[in-house]
Each structure stands twice: as structure tokens, then as C-alpha cells.
Image (cartoon, rainbow over all chains, first blue to last red; front, side, top):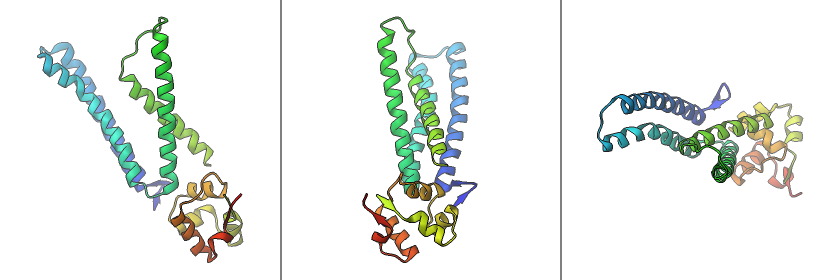
Length: 133
Length: 63
């Protein structure tokens, strides 16, 4: 059922996430370069700027697919708890930060919400794995 | 919910990994059930009962 402690659903998720991350890096670099040096129409600029977001959205879809494909009920529940914790942490921190911007904290671009969510997902995942030993 | 999974497993000299393989679940699942962190679904509870050839209520009990 598992290979080196990773089952088929986890393996598919990991492969997909790595592929999406590589596509994200390439589209982000290309988008930044084109926006800086290209002479594009506004509509083309918006479309180009949205490209890296598609890879991030793809990882959200991969998380959803993992939940559907995971055959081990405990690992599925653990992932759901992990998602709930990371969503809660992200919502709490971004809400707090938003209000603190009124007091002078610098404005943070919206795409950092996804970055924070992925970081929280990773940290919570590590904590859960440690607790499971 | 309490369970006797650890005792039953020890009686048969099975490791958590052995039991996980027989039940076709992860070792983490066995560990979580044994330590009471996770209550298995009814289908998994039936599989456990079948494996040990015992009625469910002799493995799982209310607190």
C-alpha cells in the first residue's frame, strides 16, 4: 500500500505540487520580465499577471483531489484538520494585520495570503506528524 | 471510546506495522486508534473485529 511510508495518493499530490511549483516559478519570472520590459496592452498585462496565480490555484485543486483519493480514513481526517488549522491561522493573522495597517504597518500584497496558508499548512503538517510518532 | 487494540495486537506479537498491513491502513492509523486519538469508522471497526475474530463490543467500548 505504501512505499517508503508514502501512499499512492500522497505520492500523486507531491508530484503534482512539485510540478505546479516549477510552473509557478517559470511563469512568475516570465511575467515579471514581460511586465517590466514588454510593451503590452492593459488586457494582456492583466492576463499575464494572472498566470502565476493559476499554478497556486492548481495546488488548491491538488489538495482537494488528495482528499478525494486518499483511501486511508485517518490520514484523510488528519489532512482536513491540517487544512482547518492552516485556514484558521491564515484568517486570524491576515485579519489582525489588516487592522494593524490602520496603525501604520506596511500594506502586504494579497497573494501573500496564499503563501501564508501554504506555510501554515506545512508547519501544522510537521506538528501533526511529530505527534503521530 | 476505549479499545483493546494494543492488547490484542501484543497477544499476537504483531507490530503496529504488521497490524496496519493486515488492515490495509497506515501505521499512523493504527497508532492513532490505539492511543485513542481517533475513533475508526464503522467499516474499519468491522474489519478490525473480523481480523481478531471477536465481536466489536469486545474490542471497543464506551468511556
